[in-house]
Image (cartoon, rainbow, N blue to C red; front, side, top):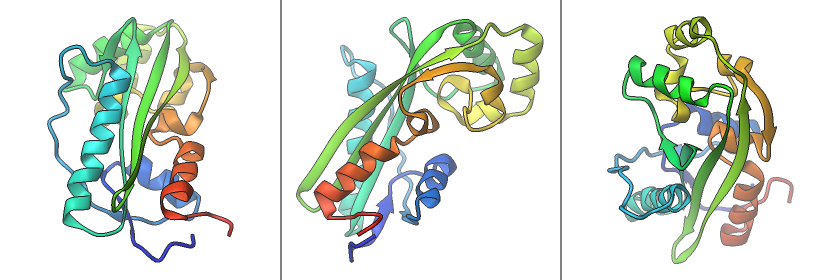
Length: 193
């Protein structure tokens, strides 16, 4: 990394932190707590892009540096699935996703002073038909409870994913190739030069 400014992640997500650490980036973690309710008429893609930018802006007002914000949702038949509120909601989400292909949309933003990029990336994910035994056993692990769509492709939840079309890291929560392009464009941050 060749930027002298601190890199800041406006998220407490351990998955996003792990993705960045895997490529050698160790940002300062500054979580935000925003109302993540969608605005009437807003598409899921517009929502995650808006929330990613809002999270980054909140942190940029508090700290100087290059700030990354992100937000992810799972979309099936026009309906967004964020993090389940409880086990019952996780079970309901998994029943809906079972045997279907859905979209995972992650919005991300990079801010460096007045320079900014806000984008979104979509990946198609197919889930195998799930039995209630599989769903209940998976929910009992607690893994689905803090994940958009109630599953983690990088964890136990990979047992149910039969196909992905697009970015794997996007499904985990941060589209790394697109993020690196934005970091280079906005702040001159590069992994190899």
